[in-house]
Image 1 (cartoon, rainbow, N blue to C red):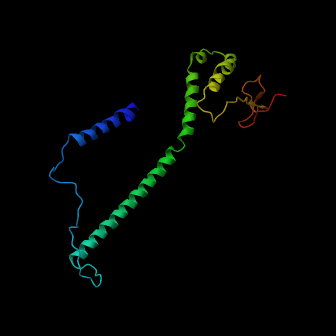
Image 2 (cartoon, rainbow, N blue to C red; image 1 turned 90 degrees about the vertical axis):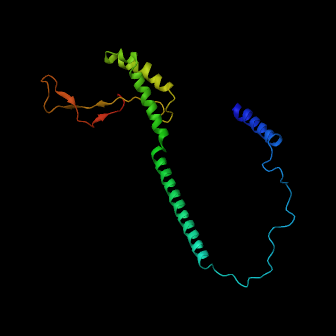
Length: 187
């Protein structure tokens, strides 16, 4: 920033002073005088009508038109290619922000799952206190994904059903098939 506002304008001013005071003109004998009279003399001959070019002039005009037409085609192809590239980039990277938030949340949870507090859990009774006192405050305090909002835990309970073929003779009740679970309140 100091270079942009300080050094660069100073260098430009010093170069301008050098070239205006020290450097000599390329041709010192030439004067900067305005042209008094034009070098082209007016033609008094009137052309009765305009004629199309003939011969070599016609060939040159056609060649120039062909080059211009080819240049316009190349420019149009280039613009279509750039538009295609822009659409492709927008399709691939346009929603990168939502993926980055999900990635940050996933990496934050992975980091907390690799912590010593989680690795010290040995019983299921230790998991829920760790979850409520360590993981949830860590996720709530992490502002990496504001769209997701605070996480909510939900307990899913399977409904009991009679087993058609009990695995152990002393246990007549087993969990129902997948999909028949309840998330309602205790009551």
